[in-house]
Length: 318
Ligand code: NDP
Image (cartoon, rainbow, N blue to C red; front, side, top):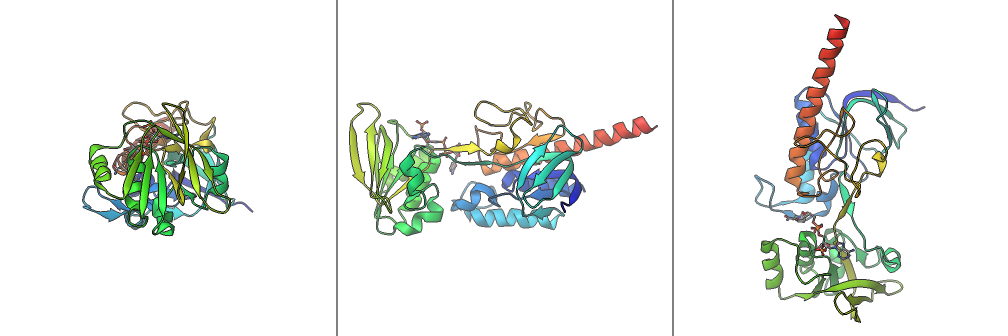
């Protein structure tokens, strides 16, 4: 039989936004429940060194997330390993049903489900995923010791993946569809200084060859339209992310790309009492530290929302 549980604040997602919301909500004595989702710890669990988290000159992503989790627990968060499968924000309290069958009734909700890697959309990419095609150098780089791998993308992720892969691969080729990288200058300087990395500019990956593993890629010049093949043993796709918001379709307002819309200088969504924080609503900064800041705001706003609701109930009773 499905168990029904009530919480003042339900936090969905366990990245920096979710854990920070949990820490603030727990310290406000709201006894938050955090449902950790498909990838506990979020995107930082598939990152290596994090060098821009204040207070840590260098820390591994998974270690940083374990520290956040343990802090959230220590201050009184109940962390539940489960996946929310559906939500109903038209009812009060809000309803969120988990894969396990647990039905959560929540006075407020913080959506912190983050974002996930984008793929090129090639059939060969789907066929060879896990057989040489990957979106996570941290997870799969080890398998390419002494090999030649390609990375596609021009942002900070692509550059960092390429740099990380030089720890294993003999050669790394970075392929970008334009003639200029989007990555920041510090990362670019590191990239261009690395003798193991070669650049291919103005090229799109239009096919991946190989039956049981990657043997090569087909490149189409985005200026001339010319095709050429490049022999590689692996392809890492690093072309950005999509927000994990399918669950909330029709429940809260989103933009055309599926990012949850929040009020200016606020985490308030289109539904009073539902807040959104982190990569799920931020396509500009997308940093752990900005996600954490938003998580803090969401908890403070949820606390205020609950206090106003309690005041209102008292006035009605009086
Ligand atoms: P970005 O959106 O910054 O970059 C995506 C890259 O992929 C762009 O260069 C884009 O090309 C390219 N691209 C997108 N779609 C395709 C496609 N279909 N085919 C080929 N290329 C494509 O994403 P990132 O994941 O790199 O970074 C996300 C955010 O996280 C950014 O704000 C970034 O700065 C930040 N970040 C910061 C880090 C740090 O500070 N250490 C580390 C990693 C990420 P184009 O340039 O032509 O649009």
